[in-house]
Amino acid sequence: MATYRLIHKEASTGARSSGLDDLMFRVWVQYMLSADDYGVCPAVPAKFQGDNPRLAKVSVKKLREAIGALVMSGLVRLFKDGENQYLYQHDWQDWQKLKHFTATTYPVPPAGDLAQCSDETREIFSQRLEKIKRGFPPHAGARDAHAHADASADAPASANASTPKPLISGPAHPGNWGKVHGPHVTGFCDFVCLPELVFSEFVMRVRSGGASDEDAKDQVMLWAKSVRAAWQGSGRIPGDNIFDFWRNEWKATHGSNKPAAGAVDVLAGMR
Image 1: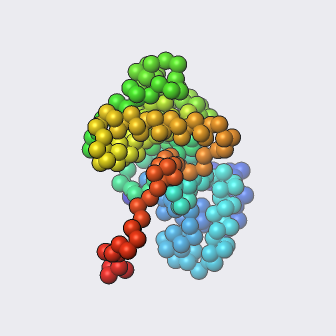
Image 2: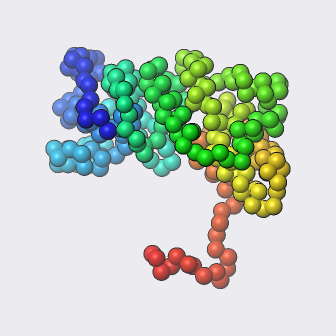
Image 3: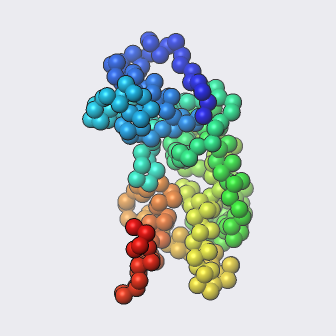
């Protein structure tokens, strides 16, 4: 991770930062120091306590309140990945001006949150997503899955693939949107994006049951469209991130792996 962070001289007079008390200001600065080079940091007091000896003496309750105050001030924002919550700054790169980024295991904010980020900040996340995409080996031709998607579009799937239309709030940046949504199966991004990685995962499961590659793709695509139709007719709003949403729906449809009655627990001796 970069060994420096930039802080503008207006931090002492800005409307948001000057409204912080001493503890909140210290937590804000520590957020910038603890965050990865993309501005993402776990939103848990233990992270701040572990990185800052002074904050280690502050109670978890007070730190949680300080983190909440930062979010309310608008200096940082919050997103959820699975069961974990993370802080990020929507205009991080506008201030930090980083040129080289250290590898990180922290997640990328969801597409809807990225749409609200500044151009420069959205661009560094887009570049990271491209690196993640290139790091995955080819999977069962999921890139071509849009050829089978015809339920929710009036135009041919190939036309959809060439002219994606994001239905997310915030300023439109077609080039950047394409970078973020390129690894997604076409036809779902105006509902809940279906990552190619997850689509391929499901295809491989269907193939393991004896289906051909093309039949497996068709089955997964039909299932995904049925999920979309069920949700859109229910009036409910999906709450999970895109990976958890589709995997939870798959589990709800197909169940999960459970030991059969009387089966031997092979992990018992390792617990």
